Image (cartoon, rainbow, N blue to C red; front, side, top):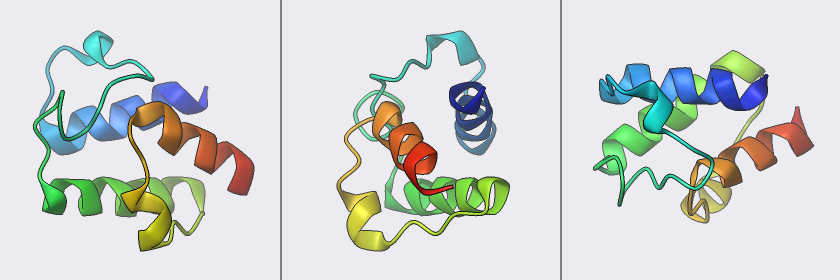
Length: 76
């Protein structure tokens, strides 16, 4: 499932031990304390994994992980 793979990528990039705490409503910045560099690295890892390109303008608009998953679903 796409969400599960995105969740794995985010957990790996940020060193989150409680993967199950990540939900579609989880915010990278507010809930997982990711900084802008973390966010860029996560987006790059997702692009590589799913073969999609996520423009900076789109990535800046992602409010939560569900937004990322929705974008990938529509564009892969």
